[in-house]
Structure formats: C-alpha cells, structure tokens
Length: 298
Image (cartoon, rainbow, N blue to C red; front, side, top):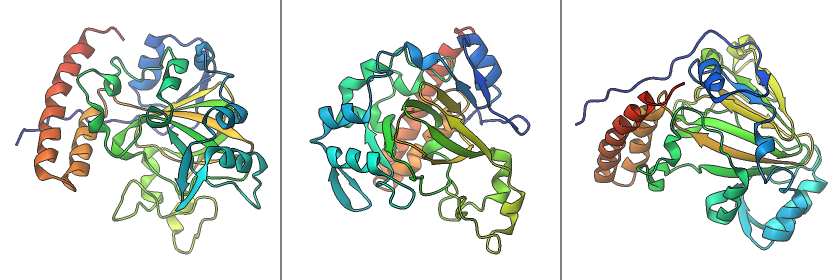
C-alpha cells in the first residue's frame, strides 16, 4: 500500500479570543490565520457577493418553497419550514438542522457567492482533479436555516477533517467553540470520536466532571460576517433570531491527507476496492496540489 507522507494539522497555543478583521489581504489571511490554524471572523469579505442581501426567508419560500426536506423522519416542504422558522421560539423551536445541499437543490445559487473565500493557497476542494464523489459523506456548500430557540443537536468536529467556513446571509448565529487542546475535557464518543458525549447547553457534571475544566469561546456571527476555523475545533450553535447561513468546507495542505484517509474509511464500508482507489488517487493528486502550493506566494 502507498506509504503515507501526511502533513498533519498542527496547532498553536490555546486561542482565548477570535479576532474580527476587515480589509484583510490574502497574504495576511494565510500568514496570520490559516498557517497558524487560528479561527477568524472576516467582517467585510462577503459584502462583495451579489447574493448578500438576496437570500432571505421570503426569497427561499418564493423560489424554493415547493421543494421538500426530511428532518428527523418528518418530510416538510420548504414553504412550511420557513413559516415554522419565522414563528420559532425557545418553547416551540422550528425543526433543525434545516440544512440544504446547495449543489443538489439550487446549484444556480453558487454564482451569487463569489469571489469565493479560499482557505489556503489552492482551493483543493474545488480542484479540477478532485471529483465530487470523493466528498462522499459531506456537502461542500450548504444553507443552514433556523429559527429562534433552535440549536445544533450536539458538540462536534466536522467530518473528514474539513476546515469550516460559515457566512451569515440573514440574521445572526451564536457559536460555542472549544479549541483542540480542550478535547480531554469533552468526552469524545468511543464509536465516533468527532462527536462529544456532553450536552453543552445542559451539562451533566456528575457524568462528565472534567467538562468543568473546559473553557468555551462564545462568538456571535452577524449578518454579512464570515467565520473561518480549522479542523479540530469543537463547535455547536444556538440561534436567537431567524437565521440563514452559508456553510462551506475547505481543504488545504494542513488537512488534505487526513481527509483522504478518512474518506477512504467512509468508502470501505461499501467497497474495499473503491476505498483503495480513493486512497491511491487522493494521495497522487495531493502531490500535484503540493507542487502548486509551492508556486503561490503566501
């Protein structure tokens, strides 16, 4: 089997606050945040997008209200879900997560979110040599739509070691985050170590006493802002008003080979031969991307 030469993700000392930055150059983003694996909120980058200000609950209802989505075993149409989101309350929250695979449901919307923010020197996830079937197990672009009182059901690290981008298109969203150095306090599930056993919003300290030592970062991402953070960061969300977010995952030199190994594991559940093909091909094109990285100044 091909010998792995993975460049593992490395982390700096614990992050105590998340910077909010504007007018950040590509070079500054890479040097100050991407290479050190530090989260950052870009306050103005998405203001360049034609889609900023376009995507509202009413827009979703009018343009895509006829589409359907199954949430926790119940099928809804988008129009009904939007009505529920607008009427949502902590006592009676709308179904969540109401996430929409943009490339499946509304691929024409991608053009409205450009120029894209690239979390690295090369946009590896959209590289012409990386086919979408190698993203099996996740979506690259997603709308997350939620109402007041909703929250993500568990604290987690994103699948496949992917870096994360979240842009608020409408309303705001609160993130509760823990740096990778706090993993010992978060009780990862034995069967799925990317998911915590702790109910962050209602912790059981008798069952999870070490969670008392955990120090969350709570950050509000406002309309028009973009939160970027690397793999390894635990996170969950709370919503305090109607909210529409655009999520996007990223690959760069720091997480690419971890992604390939994890993706091969996903495929192994279906086919050992396909798993081996993903591993061999993924590593081969990774070497090409590594070379391309060297020719891009950062």
